[in-house]
Amino acid sequence: KSTNGKDASPQQIQYLWRALALAPYQHIKQVLTRNWTSVNNEALTQRAKKDGNKMTAEGNVFSPLQMVLYPAVSRYADVLLTMENRQNRDEISQLLSMHVLDHVLTSRTRVQRHNRRIKELTASSESQTANADNSTDLLDEGDDRWRDQGYTRPKVLVLFPTRGTCWIFVKQMIRLLGDAAMVDNMDRFDEEYGPPAMSEDGSDDEEEDTARVRRKAILKQKGPEWNELFGDDVNDDDDFKLGMSLTPNVVKSAGKKRRNVAGNADNGSGASGVSVKLFAEFYRSDIILSSPIGLKMVTTKKDDDDEDEETPTDVDFLSSIDICLVTRSDVLLMQNWDHVNGVLDCLNQQPKQISDIDFSRVRNYFLEGQGAHWRQLILVSSFADPHILSTFRRHSKNVEGQLKIKKKIPSDKASICDVMVRVKQVFQRVTCQSVTEVGSSRLRYFSDHVLPKLMRLKQKHTLIYIQSYFDFVAVRNLLLKREVDFVSVTEYARISEVSRGRARFLQGRKDIMLYTGRAHFFLRHKIKGARHLIFFGLPEYPEFYPAVVNMLNEGLSDKVQEEEDDVSRMPMSSLALYSKFDAHQLERIVGTSHCDRLVRGEKTSYMFC
Image (tube, rainbow, N blue to C red; front, side):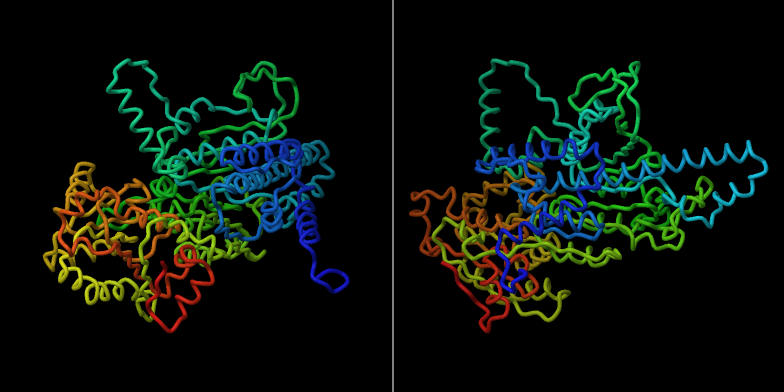
């Protein structure tokens, strides 16, 4: 409401958000603010041009999304952002990288200032014996003015799915530091985390050129989202860990050469800058950048008595984390979300080794075991998922509260609108009482109502899309028990096995194909030979639904269809099995308004044409 009692206009609302965002921005370290506007607008403009948008940099400090997000981030509230996409990914990452850098530089500057002051007091007490008692009082453990750190040095933990995403984030941070950054081990970082070196042997072999052109065409079909994660020009390794230390107020010496932000050797000019060291030891790092599996390999070991049991080892370097940032949570969900939960469980525990800890400098809430309540947790994802929501609800304990940002999906923006094949799409709601019964109830419905019909009609060219691998195992065992002829394409299958199964399915030698959601995420196969589609659970990514539906009738020529019998020439069909606990996936596919009707309606079957 405005001051006159009427609803505020969009311009007034935007002005208020800008004021809320600019208030904490005034306290950002100067080394960041002098580069923020130009670097941020440049990144947004490049992304807009790459995606073909008309947005240009207007010289504003924040974009509209950044203005909404930054007030909560700057006051260290826990944030759950479930609306990330290719268009806004850069602006979100830029804002969070600035927040991480500002926190580390502010903390390190405070520690350096206190170190100098304590050193001065110690020297004064040694020179003035008469005032020794008074100087000792200033350093007494009961004096909270010196409590400026945790048990260990690492303050920020950032989780990434791949080395390539880590490389982009680190590059953003170094770019924000600008000419003030003096980076060690940059060449090694680019070699191990940057784009892989492309072989340019200049071969004149026509076969190699043809294979290269064909591969480029195949990769282009997989889409830009896939290529940014797993393409040939990115590093998609998911097992890594990296320590990064920052030392502010470093004077650039003329004798020491380092890499600056432009990638050139910096001979130094005597100006004050920030020393950045990559590949630092964890206990000497300020920021830890890692994948969940990479950090789990460090913090756990196999039990000798039971190989399935894992016991935690040294996790003291995670005892004083102030900010935990989980990027690309949707991708981590496709890898193994249990690793993320395992890492979060290790945060802010009381250390086991206390020999090197100066307890007179440790903050009181760490000593009281309340570090988790002062830790900021930020989860960024492209969609809301029960696993992500459960993790946020479990580990979000911040005294500053929570902020959850999601967007409603209009019916005309739902992914079902991207279906180009003329097919009747049936959504069948499966009744179940609790979330633990979803899998068994869906399998029971499939076994009692869907599978008998497939066997009775001897229906061929049937593709069954299964989101969960556990559901895939259950369906596979059911088909084996019923002696149904089928092939399967999973993320664990060999390339030869996948190629053989796809060929047999296209030729009609196998009636049914089981296709897992994770296989589609990591490989983006274009399945040919399908005329009937069954979704055994809805896809997590909304764009997967139209992508799979549009595969219907792909690769089946009119000549082949004429040779089939009448049963195989039935109209194409699509059936999606869902429950009321799949509301998040359903909303992204059919839209918010349709989702409410499909979840709460009296009918259990709904059709979209």
